[in-house]
Length: 175
Image (tube, rainbow, N blue to C red; front, side):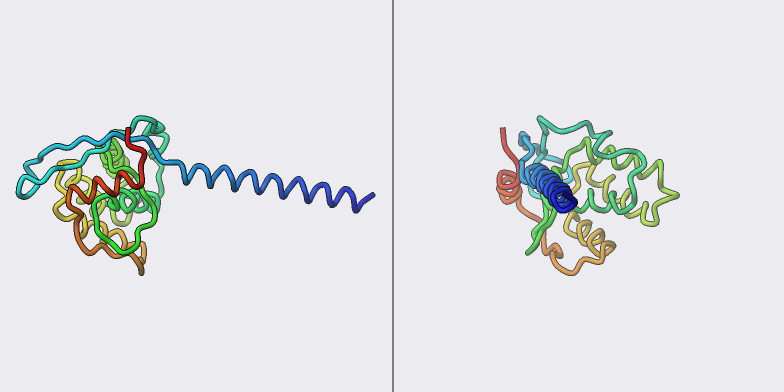
């Protein structure tokens, strides 16, 4: 009898683990729905277009980025957003780079700057991005990458607007 109970409990545990793993796999493979908006910014060289992503099915930014975010979560968010604009051999983690996310992160870092060792670096990057200045986005990526002790995936340049559009189309569901 004990053997049957043990096997039944083990089977239920395996089913639960598989179910949770399947949910998170589905969630990570599901592409976010976005729209692409192209604008020209004064901060862009040679009339290059700035690609702006407008999300159509995102969770509220306050839930995605709560005020009590850890410093590691701040680094992960900046790093993930930078991938949309940088050239690198390897990229892990993609977060659509939106004005709403950038502004929310600025608010969080400003409110918690005494708790973040590298708050000035984050604010320098985010304030530049909030002005559509991505002229140093590869250096921004690498600053964060260095803080995360990165060894693979160093940015080697900035994507053209056409390359950025291709990246977005590959990683997000365009409406």
